[in-house]
Image 1 (cartoon, rainbow, N blue to C red):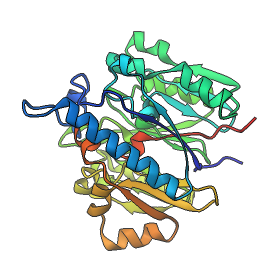
Image 2 (cartoon, helix red, strand yellow):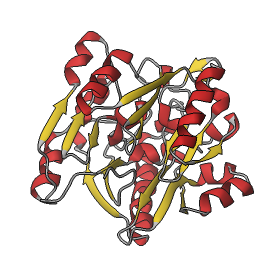
Image 3 (cartoon, helix red, strand yellow):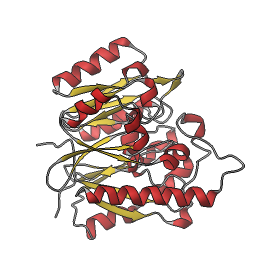
Image 4 (cartoon, one colour):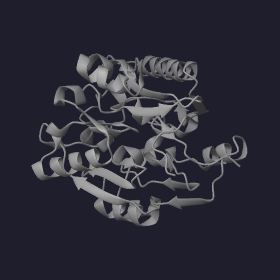
Length: 310
């Protein structure tokens, strides 16, 4: 039986966190550095937020495999591993084609070796889609795609980082069907689907207001209802506070938790919190620095591990 949520998460501790100038143009959620910003201070604050998040999740009995980034690689975005790798229940691993050349150094075989050899996860097949980069076809993992793992459906909004050609390759290799649509923020394509949508076991977060075509909205809502998920409708303002960039996980006792940033939590209305709380305990995490300069939030910082243990 396919699972939608897991209790085993991979996170990468940043060594050179900063605002990546190569991704600024396509990421409306990201802020560039100004003359008064201290690179050292930003890195220090990011580490503080990262370690606090790891500790908070472990306090809730959620299993975190935290790996250090390699300083010499000069990765500004290493703490977003979900963009380059996904781990699946059939013991396959997918490596993704990434738009920013500076981010391609984040792909690390030593991390795969670590979870296989030292954490006893089974990796039976590695599907490396990096070859698509040379043709300009990009697909940035569970940033570009929101996966309904139970029904094998991938939801994806079109953007310069989410190519339909690459999505088709993914779907063919992993036997998924796709739902593709346009989603906009101030008339600009939303760079990653996971900032406007998230799927849990019993809930579906969506900012329908961002979706351009009413037919797409109706189709997506219908699929959510068929899968018996309660729809948590987000406003554009809430989406811009990262209320869509959330992730449901289980702890080692099988209890559901929803991971989100403090900023996202503060944007929610009381009825939304009540709806979420029926199925999940919310864990709000302060991530102001990472959100501001990285343009991503709590969900982006996590690569879920669905692999079986040896």
